[in-house]
Length: 296
Image 1 (cartoon, rainbow, N blue to C red):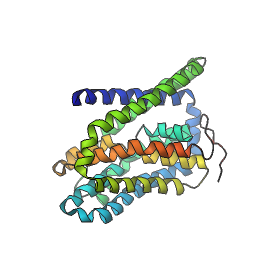
Image 2: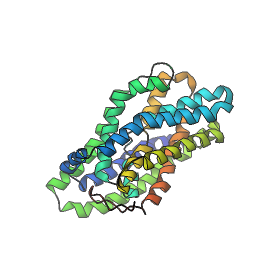
Image 3: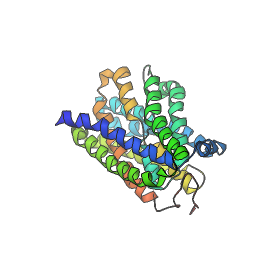
Image 4: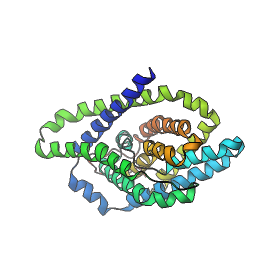
């Protein structure tokens, strides 16, 4: 059973990401993506939050709350900080869609944060983590190309060359994206329940508090329309735990971080959906990157 789940996980994840990103590409243009950089405020705020505030929040909360765990405290702190160093997960785009955020801004943020992780994290990691942390640059860039640029490019190409296909494809792709999002959650949750039990419910609670604080800070400290708040917070909530696992396996192999990182990953996957569904009812919904009227 475990073998079947391990095979299905990456397959469902790729289908989910491709359906989501191709669907986004159908509703936008390269011109709109480029235009989002003319309004850099949310991009700058997202960079500051993800590169500095998120690992700082994780470090402060974990140090304060994990002290009672004794020898396990340092491992919990490293796991919490490590995963919060790596922003730019493609699944964040789906949360942006569900919350009624700006798809175009979300794409811009995804690309900028992925590149920022490559450039900035080697320096910030040494401030928050012990020892030398080698950032897997190739893995991050490969993820960006395979799971963002290629499917987005397919959607953009279809929009440019076959505009009549847009109406035929948009709804089915949305359905496929939603179905496989649920499948990814289930397939990821089932085999990793032992990770939560092994980590302990108090550790789960620590990670959950960090997750909630990340959302609160990224949402309420984003100055601007509600649609920008939604987009920045939804993208910022989704961390690239695949890269975190890669770093953990090299720089912190002796710490046994995998169960802790899996626990945090489950919180990221499952916790973002209800927040996105609540945000959907505030501030209107974006269409093809056009900002909706704010209620604030």
